[in-house]
Length: 190
Image 1 (cartoon, rainbow, N blue to C red):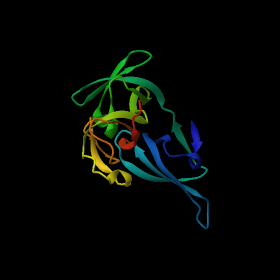
Image 2: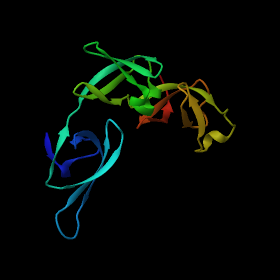
Image 3: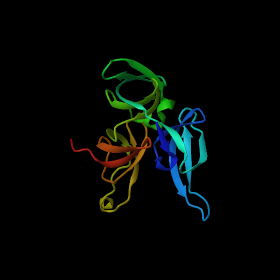
Image 4: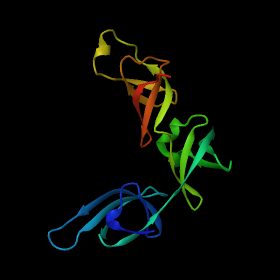
């Protein structure tokens, strides 16, 4: 689908020079003389290489729509992640490297949204919030619970997160995932 370069937003996928690229940033510049230009920072989906390209605002680019399908996480086999389509029961195998840092937060039977183009998986989205146990944390120091200081803790998946002082080992917490990085959100109340 052809669209004007000025309408591109962060997260859009475009085809540029035969490559699929994700728009990271779009900045419209209006020089004193001449027409406006759209400065696009984009990342090649397959290689991860970044590039800056300038388009005249009336120039059109090919915007690609990715197919989004729900897959269920089945199991890990070394560095391979095995997923199953929830509708067709077809299974695919991708690597942890393909999924990025969010692969550390995979949990049994978790639903993962897979974005694909012509059958090739390109992007993965885990749920925004994940419930997980704290396996290591410093003990509570009396009187410190009223302050706003945070302390480091280690989650059951081995990732570090900063938590409030009252969180102890064995506590279930809700972690918010953003760009594959987990951030403490709240104590789990379930």
